Length: 112
Image (tube, rainbow, N blue to C red; front, side, top):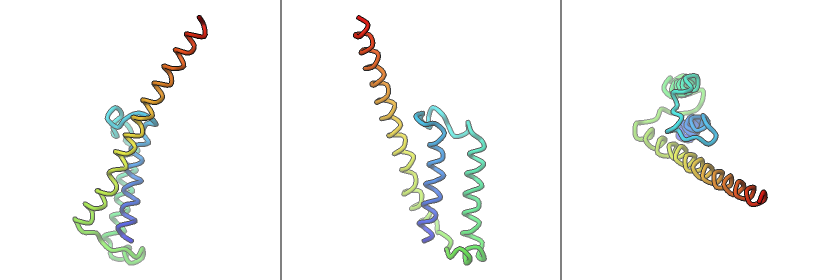
């Protein structure tokens, strides 16, 4: 249960990075352009660490602290979200640019 919760938190935080731009890559719009997002992510991860590693809160939430290897597993499962979204954005950019070219060629032929 703890691994599932941690993966969910990590995926949502990484997904928020992808939400900086609908079709722009993280390479063209790095996360530090929105310091408020980085602050919110830090607070979210901080609260998650708090409930994981403060014994009273861990008992309340029914979770256990994660080991280093378990955190590596969380990252291994959550980080591909960034890669998948980057690929989808790339495909979207390629598709929209080719569609725009087709529309301009059609309009040019229509005018003739």
